[in-house]
Length: 383
Image 1 (cartoon, rainbow, N blue to C red):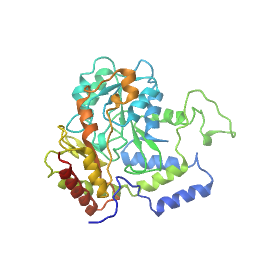
Image 2: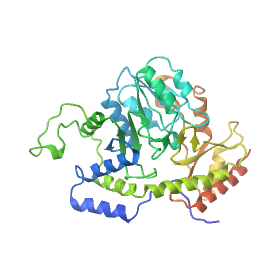
Image 3: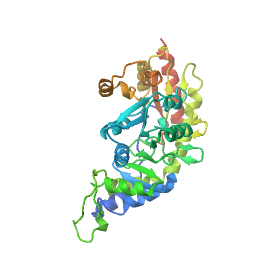
Image 4: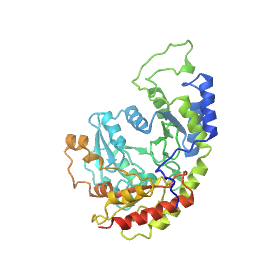
């Protein structure tokens, strides 16, 4: 067996990306150039959205969209209990209250039944497509319509994921994507907000750059502009956009590798008794194959620490998505009084999940090696 380490994630950067960065650096135009609009147009076309607005991160995109839609104090926003803390933080940062929804034990996504049971108003619903599998958008939209809320998708792990014949990022008012280095594609850091609402896209572009009434290329005289709305500095640099644009050219290949590796790893893991695997297809949803979540038995009969130790000994990288239900993190539990036991499915996942790699840095043989290593580590960890 190979001794070469297999990390959980690894950015796939080739000569095209380096050449694109060099071209930007040599141009001297590091922001406000033509590369960012080109990246936006290419990503919008890929997703099937009318507009794409480049931002500094997925978190920035979520925060900026809520801010632009005037979500604030007195508003309540539904978010899943099992997600990256950034989803809830974006709500807190505009002064609104996150309403945490437990997740579906079959998918890890926001549980539609729990969402339907929410009492009181909601200004927005933020479904997170957990590990790349789209949420039940039909039922989420039904609740949104009944509550008069808009839907903002957290698409951090959902590039190319589909619900029916639509891609994630086109399933609500807007969607926010992440280009962190180990995601489906990278721009070093950075994110993108997609929408079919041109007025929203216009406002997002203004507010990501301090609220200037004229972008750099629109000013009749250098340095002269007005500011009539609040905004932040959430712009993407030209260097980041150049890397992202180069990545889109390879995305078909990346996604094919992910699908192949997912199938190879899933075939081995499916033979392990007591292990829960979330599906890569569920109803109208098809996953983006970010990773495979191996969920250990609820009864604690298999020690996660021992499984991870076994994987580490075999030089297999892993991760946890996520280390706790967001409402039970200290900040939220102290502010809102949440207690253990209120989000049983999210708590199970936080305690017992192990995320395994399927990215394009793996060959099919690597994926099989991950599966065999997990099977061995799992057997050793049985108490």
